[in-house]
Image 1 (tube, rainbow, N blue to C red):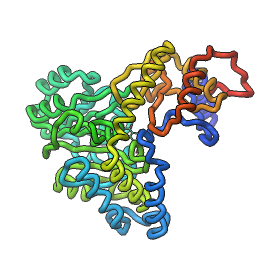
Image 2 (cartoon, rainbow, N blue to C red):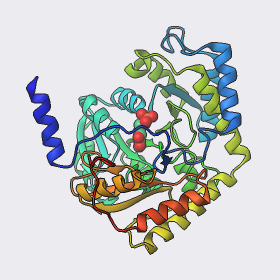
Image 3 (tube, rainbow, N blue to C red):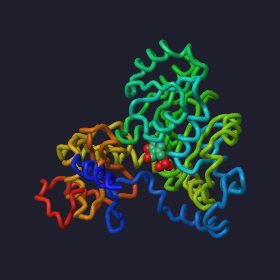
Length: 383
Ligand SMILES: Cc1ncc(COP(=O)(O)O)c(C=O)c1O
């Protein structure tokens, strides 16, 4: 297995090697806990209650014996929150995409996917064996051209897009996607992993933000693991769709269901969000403020009103150096590199959370201001 070492050395040579960092003792500026639900006392309390009642794991897949009242209550809550008739849970966002997209389209069908969709969508598209066409990022004229040229030749068609793009923070135009889907008789699949709890005045996601409502051809996927502070994922849509996924989605059928405590915590987070929409407003304001401060420091930070602030540094090595400099000051801001983003488009992905304290933000901005110091290899290994 000497090739393993060669491969790893190759990654190091390109500044693309990754290692995991222990988070303890660091101020975390890159988690997706946008609304501070991960540690919210009521969320934790509700999870502990379910943990005591049900124990640690769920014990089996949803279809065997792993479906409890906690799962059902969360599905009902999510369906109501997203404005759809029905919802089914999945073990994670990755599993939801992997299980749903190939269940909806296959060899006889057409799949149209945005160029910057999340890796789990890319993998799901490959797994589906559908005829895959990639449209330019948020370029709906390109999408329409592809539809005009190709739609008629295929049985079913699925258009797939992130609602908020995870590494750039920009937003798909849901209104246009909906119109095109209708016009060309396609299903529309929206990945709302970073839109849930973030977009719209009440954090309901893309439909709320665009003042649109759900229609039967729409499949709304989202995760519990980001703004809702928990773990797992869901797919919302029609009753028929849920019934179909329960019968056909392999990652739902052949994987152990979420622990009930995780579901209970996520449900409580939604209940709090419904009562406290100020969280969404505060998140937006803080993102705006931080964006202004970072721009003043001279960073190039594209901003679309979401809590994802990519500090563009382009060169992989530079991204690593800045990350390590911050690490040496106890701050965690990861360097995002290929294959998560294209080569030469490395960035530090700062995510805003309403849990950040003023002094933490001050320390971050101060540390980003400091010019790079010569690396001390024993202090901060640069890979
Ligand atoms: C757009 C998008 N979809 C899906 C996922 C996968 O979700 P999970 O982390 O729950 O597997 C992510 C997570 O990074 C994401 O950003």
